[in-house]
Structures are given as structure tokens and as C-alpha cells.
Image 1 (cartoon, rainbow, N blue to C red):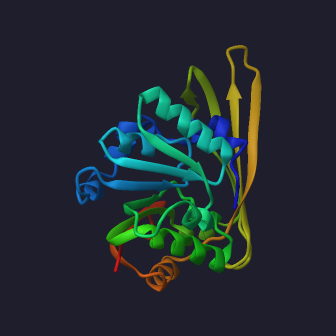
Image 2: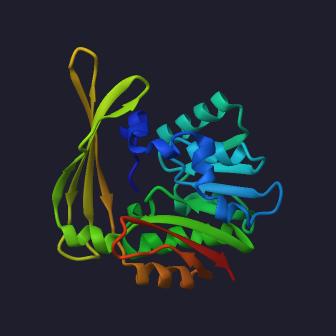
Image 3: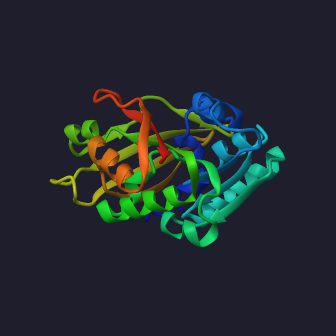
Length: 251
């Protein structure tokens, strides 16, 4: 797993303006949230800095947020306190989830923010999905967002530099992605993400982190879900789109 401990401190520069307010992030999932019962129990695994978890708690849901990064869990707890939201934040990677929670606990599990590709290969991805499936109640749903890796790999190794400054907390930054695309799907790939912050004097401070990832094809993801007892219910997958959302229900 990748820790994101460096990027955790500047992660808000990677979140779009539309999803930075917790209520707005939660609202982007209105269609699936409408399927939940009142006072639903929800798990946000790979919670990042907690925008979604806090937004869900603001709707009266019983929310647990987990992440493999201690720094991300800390920032989620801080955001929860800032908004007066009741969120239980726990440091745990996917494989450790069954050690913290009883099977069949949650009505919905979120795994969003393009996080699943950090699971190490087919074995790691299957283990992650198995853990999430175990924690869902029968009929519960997994909500997953993913990069369209078919599109990412077609572009090859490259450097992507944002064409405009991003402003957060009164500071501007340029976001840079360096993609190291391996020859084969099953090989370890790398993404280096750099956030170059510019202060009022023109000085630049750069924070970067090299992240490992193991891409997967959409058909492979569906097969992995089926193996762990999840059935794809809805999907926005499009080979020409950068990202997609998939909703799978527990059989």
C-alpha cells in the first residue's frame, strides 16, 4: 500500500473545487445515497482528508472513515472536529478492515478517489475487495470510483503539468503528475505527484510523493467483484472518459 503521508499535508490541492466542501462532495453521490435507509451505517475506506466522510455524517449517517495513512486519518479527525461531525476515524488498510469491524456491518461502503489501484496486483486487489464485501450487509452496496486505466495506459509515460494555478487557504500551487507506465498491465506502475506552492514573494515550495499502482481493466474489475460476491448494478464506464463510478451490490 501507498501511505500518502507527504501529500496528506497538501492534499486539498488535489481535490476539485466542486468537492472540497464536505456537503458538496456528499451531494455528488446523491443518486446512490437515496438508496440508503435512515440512519444508515456507512464506511468510507481510503477516506483521504475526510471531505466525503464529514459530508455523509452531516446528513445524519453513522460514518466510519479508514485510511492506510496515519496522516490522512489525523486530517479526517481534524476536519470532523471543525465541522462538528460525528465520524469515527481509524487507521487501517483494506486487508485489516475485518480486524476492526464485524462482518455485515455497513449498508454502504465507499472506495473513491481512485484508490483501488494502490492494492498490489491481482492478489492485493482481490483481498481488498473481499474485505469490503465482508463488511457489507446482504443487499448493501459498494460505491467505487476509478481512473479509466485503458485510457491512461494508451497515453504512455508522460509529464502532466496543470495549466492553471489552484488556490487553497490563500496560497497558489501548480499540480504536476509524472506517469511511469510499465510495459504490461500486471507490472507495478508509478505516479509521482508534486504540488509546487507559490507564496506572495514568488518563492516555491515543492512537496512530492512517488506512488506505486497496479492498474486493471474494467472487465477484470467486474470479474474481481463477482468473485467476492458483488454484482455490478450500475456503472458510468466509458473508454473515452477519465474516470468512472461503479456501484456493486452484495448478493
